[in-house]
Length: 227
Image (cartoon, rainbow, N blue to C red; front, side):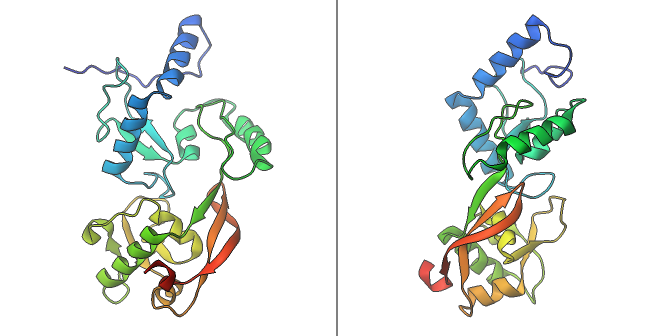
């Protein structure tokens, strides 16, 4: 029978040699193929949205830590979170100050370049590119077909889950039923409906900083380019 530690592992208490060793062991484990597979399985089974804020998930957070790494059940022991919500799950007395320092160091870093967070080891550079691709357009078409009179639809009803569909809300194309709470229900916005009907085109890339749009770039694309 699999056994778990009774309390979540903490790396932020007064440092001892044992804790430092555990910290180094854990960070080494996060670079293994086994962990990457478990992380991908977590996203595949539980969705690609952060369970707390509905943004794009980048981290598989341990709800409980196994005594032996690699024995996690990705559908039970792990939950998908964005990097900022993940850091909030590991409280540190100087969290706000450390977060601000990390943001300053990441401010001038281009989108996609990693800036390692000293709290959790994940990427502290919150600038990333959101793009509209063929799977996103297919998701919007199915959402438009499934929705009745613009009502919210749960993604399970569509039987299709585009990996990065939550990013479409940054383009103003879709919206969740409840912001900040994972419900899995979405609907098409007026702009999204016009895009699917071929009435308008949109720029294909949105640059996000801390999950907020800061600018759009790239060529304008229409729905017909993805047929």
